[in-house]
Length: 388
Image (cartoon, rainbow, N blue to C red; front, side):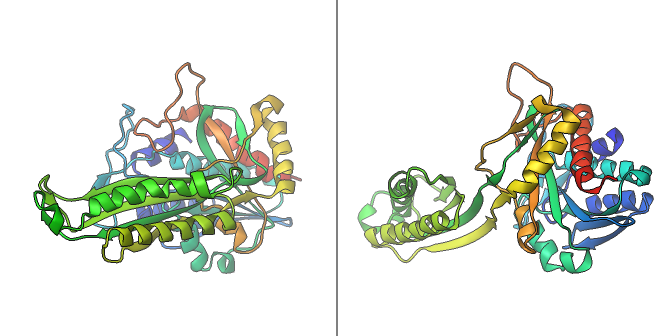
């Protein structure tokens, strides 16, 4: 198990480019005698059959991130990859997906050894492209639920920076929907000493971004949570040239469709109105990606929670509030109206200073403890439905 983790950690691949990772997973499933096939390009589906019983699916995501690892580990990644625009970038498993794959493969191996203890079918979903929200949709569009048995419930988990041996889960709305947009503003270029001859897209952008913050603070009900973040702003090449365009990106998090629609409509209204106020050409708004809701089924969440308590102990399993982070896991169940449960497991030793958050160049779980927690949690969740 530890050797598998170290291999995966040292060889991450970017979203929807997980070719070597998919091949490695397929080899591990072949060695266990588990039927498997590619789905969604770089996704892998394993079907572990063991006689009569229910069908349960379990998902582990596989992609890395464009981050330069700075953990100092002797198995640290030095991998590089190319973004969609051709940019060469370092690649790191900065969100623990290597932990997820290892835990799932190890759980599958344990179940292959203990066939007398359970009955039914497990659909192992090794999903690419979680970081870009492309992976679940790619697998669904490639006929995932036509090629694999339809489950009665789908389970999933994610390592997180709290103490190893602990579990956190949320009943009901668990993670937010997310929408990412790129906005292009157009202006008129001029010398910096002749602003009267320009239409300044930087000033236009500054007013636009400032005004966009009022969508949450002044237009939404105070009890309707939402986040609107401007993550990048690019314009101009020299300090004495007013450029002819500016670009910025937005990330929007909401929990319900009504609020989502209100915010997205508000973005369009404000961007267009500020362009008109600047007497500028019409701007463009481009959707970059969109994450679906993640809504844990309350009944199944309580059932899985009790199974996790039975395995790890009551003090180790905690109810969490809904998170503003996003996941495309929910699409796998929503597509076929099947309930699902998704939880977080701790991956770090208790320490005085907080461990690095996910998506950090310093993110490095204590793999011995985190894997033990992840495997035990996976087996407990699956065992609730499949144990004889």
